[in-house]
Amino acid sequence: MKPVVFFDMDGTLLNMGESAFEKEYLQRMLLFFERKFPGKGKDVMKAMGYAAEKMKQNDGSQSNEILFWQAFEKASGQTRENFEPQFLQYYSTDYAHIGDDYVPDTAMKELVHLLAKKGYQLVVATNPLVPQIANQQRVRWAGVGDVEWLEITSFEKYSSCKPNARFYQEICDRLQLDPKDCIMIGNSITDDGVAQQIGMDFYLLLGENPERDAATYAGEKGTREELLELVKGLAMREKF
Image 1 (cartoon, rainbow, N blue to C red):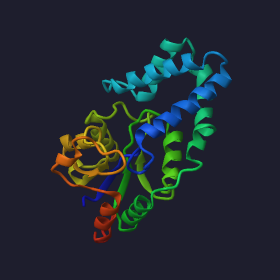
Image 2 (cartoon, helix red, strand yellow):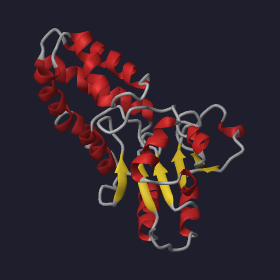
Image 3 (cartoon, rainbow, N blue to C red):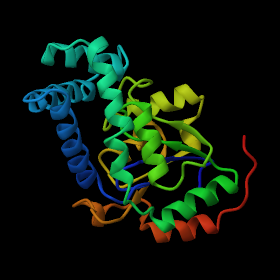
């Protein structure tokens, strides 16, 4: 395995699945902002959705964070200065409780800790659509918050999103990595497999929500348990 291992979040580090997580995330957000702005929660959510789509179309000229707030202000009539405190409060309160009953996947937790112990460098390469505070919590839900991650991606630092291969190049540039020294592990051929376009290896994680074309994918693939067995067989390496 390559010395630097990138992990997707939803459906990979977390096995709750992207659709299940998104549903819970949006429901809690709607209730939170309805409490803050009675009768206007749906309007806030609509503006959030508009801003999220703008981030996905980012041309790389500015960070996703800046683009998000520009789009949100345009769609909502709110200013970032007035709204951002409530926005961040959501992530430190209602959002944080999404993980209350989550049980980390045993195999994934073990393999991440084993890779770290064996000297591999690790990156959380989740779509950078939310702030760092949100993704740090998700890493803790996965039971790997104690791991020394080279990077946990978020909207503050990046100016592109999956499935744009430029996102993976941004990570490599930021961390001064050669893509040929990296492997991306994820459950989406479209979002995660695109890392191959810049020279990274890719391992397709098979799980609870397999893609339609996963059966015909000719590259490396397997379940969390199969990947764990592969990691157990890896040699120790010195960090470079």
